[in-house]
Structures are given as structure tokens and as C-alpha cells.
Length: 302
Image (cartoon, rainbow, N blue to C red):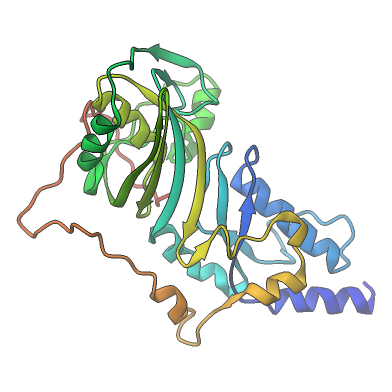
């Protein structure tokens, strides 16, 4: 290995912290991360890098919350000891912009799946949607989609379904929604701004909301606009900026205390605008899946 190559790799390995990249639609979050790693290793002078190689890794890197393949937006990346800070990204506040279509439901709850139901939506008004949004704000119970990154018997449920296996829905689990706002209503399409905590599925929200207004709905477009302190407009590096220089400019370094996030990250901790009282109860969205469906504890996917 040449001296310049050793120097470039040494610079990469010296990076410790968090930064954000833009994930475009069509690729998995893991694929995007591997492309980023491969790009940086090539810049460092590594020939034919294998970003998927787990043994003797040249570069330690991870992401802070899976985005659906069809979704786009902010993907937070941890590098070096910054990977230890990613759990906060998984459980922290996120913002999304979602465009949904009334009148059609799909098996994946988005536009990539097969249509499973068609229902009339002519009587649905913007007022109906805004009224039902109140049901999904605060601390609620949510059933994750069947097609998701959660695992059963060590395999992703989405993979098992595509292989033809029968998969039962996970049990409803507690999630937090800080804010829901109807931004546009142009039937059959409507657009929501969503601010939520970790483990929340926007696809499930849209599916439940469609049922709540006596119709059905699925996600047409999903964009993560913010995760923790990282916003799409100000922080997410597009692919042509995936360079060592650009990352150095925007890297949020690890703090000195046990690799906990710096103050800029702590400042983003979010308390729901309508926290439940100690003696209050959570509620389940309309039409929940069966209560006896199998439950497996899995870390939030974001």
C-alpha cells in the first residue's frame, strides 16, 4: 500500500462523529451506506474496496434508522466511535413529509405493492382528515406494516413475505407522535407533515388514517426532512459531495464523555406537546390487527 493510500485511510479512520447524507428513492439504506463507504475508501486510495466485508473492516460506519427503499431524505451516518451515538438517532425525533392517495390500499402500504382494496373517497373532506389526525397524535399504539425491516426467526419480515412464507403481524407497540399537520388536500392525494419518535411507521399511519375516514389509503411519496438536529436542507450531503473534505466540514464530533452526543444533539430532545398524564391510557388506531398476533421485541427501525 502506497504512502498516500496509508495517509488517506488514516484520515478516514481518524473520523469520529455523526453527519447526514441524502438517500435517494430506490435503494435500501444499507445499499446507500455501502456506496458511501466504497466512495470514501476509493478516495483514500483503496483499490476494489468491498464495503460489505465484515472482517478486518477498513472503515467503521453505520446509519441511524432505516428508510424504506422507496423513501428519500435524511439518513444519519455514524463513523468511527460515532456509531455508538446512533442509538439516540433511532429513538429520537424525526420529521417526514408524506403524500398519500385515498381510495386504494396495497399490501406494502405504499406504491410499490399490489392493490388489495379499492374504496370510494368522494365524501372525504379535508375537515374529516384533520379531525381524525387527532386520534394519532400523542402516545398511541401502532401495528407495524407486514412488509418492514422487523425480524421473525432472524429474517426480515419483508424478505420472508417475498419468499412466499406466511407472516403474522407484530403486536401493536407504543409510539409517540409529536405533531401531525395536513398541508394539502387535492383528492385523491393529500400531504401530511409528521413529527414522531423512534419506531414509528408513516405507512401504518396512512393506512390507519384511510380506514378512519371510511375509505383506504397508501403512501405515494415519503421524504424524511429531519432526524435529530440534521435537516434535509441544511445538512444532508448529496452523492456528489460524498468526499472526505465535505464530511470533515459538517461532522458533529463525539463528546469526551463516554461518546455521548454533543450539546447540539441533546438540544433536540423533544417532549410531546400533549404528554399523557400518569393515570391516562393509550389508545389503538381504528381497525387494529388481531391482538393475539406474535410479538417479538425488536429495536426500532425509525
